[in-house]
Length: 286
Ligand SMILES: C[S@@+](CC[C@H](N)C(=O)[O-])C[C@H]1O[C@@H](n2cnc3c(N)ncnc32)[C@H](O)[C@@H]1O
Image (cartoon, rainbow, N blue to C red; front, side, top):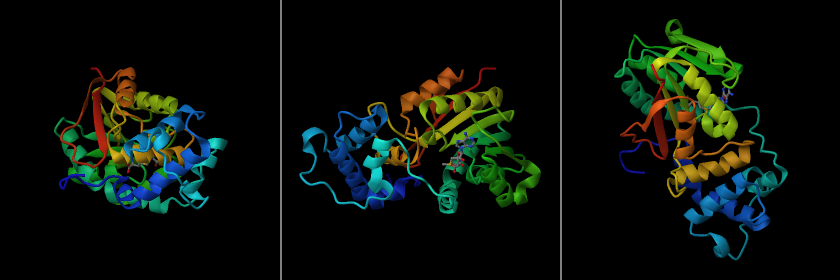
C-alpha cells in the first residue's frame, strides 16, 4: 500500500494476520492435496501458494498447527461444501465497513456529482456508509438504499437525520430492480455471491439506472493473471470459508458481467487510491 492509499476492507487484516492466513492455506493444502478439489477451492488455494512462493512441491515440511475452528477448519469446509456460520451478530462487521466507507465514498461522490448524478441507488448498501458520504457531499443529493430487510431498517434508523432525502428498501437484489436512479453502486457486494448470482445482480443494477446512467462496481482487486493484490487473493480465502460461492471475482470477470448487462464504456475510475480495491464504471446506453 502506498503512503497515499486509504485502507480498505481487508488491508489491516492482511497486514496483521498474513502469516496466520498463509498457514490456513498451507494446512488446507496439506490436508486435501491440490489436485482433487472443486475448481474454486483449488484456484483460491493455488493463487495464495503461488503468491507466497509455495506452489507445488514447495509446501513446508510440516503442517502448520492451527485451531480447528474458524478459518482453521478450512479443509473441513472445502470437504463438506458447507461454509462457516458467520453468526447472528454482525454488528462488528458493519461497524468495520462503516469505518472504511468515508474516503472511497467521498471519492465516488465527487466523481458521480461531476457527471450530473443526483439520485443514487446504493445496492447492498449495508448500514449506509457510502450513502452517508453521498448525502453529506451535497444538499441536492438523494438516495435509495437496498439491502436485506433488517439491514435496510438499521441503515434507515442510523441515517434518520437524512430521512427527507433517503429511502431505504428491504429487498433481494437478485429478485427485482427496485429503483430508477441516475447511478447505482455495488460496493463490496459481488464478492459475497457466486458467479451466477453476481452476474444477475449486475443485470439488476443496470436496470436500476435511467438510460445514460452509471453503474459502479467497487470490490477487491484481482488482476487477470491472479498475481495482483495481496488483499484480493487472501480475501478470496475468507470467501471460500464463509460463503457458498463467493470470491474475489477477478477484473476480467467483473468487466464481462458489466458488458453482458448491456453497460458500455466500462472503465476503471482513476486515480483510485484505496488499497487493494478496484472501481469499475459502465454506462447504460441512452
Ligand atoms: C459487505 S456488505 C457492503 C456494504 C456497503 N456496500 C459497504 O461497502 O460498506 C454487502 C451487503 O450486501 C448485501 N447483500 C448481498 N446480497 C444481497 C441480496 N441478494 N439482496 C440484498 N442485499 C444483499 C448484504 O446484506 C450486505 O449488507
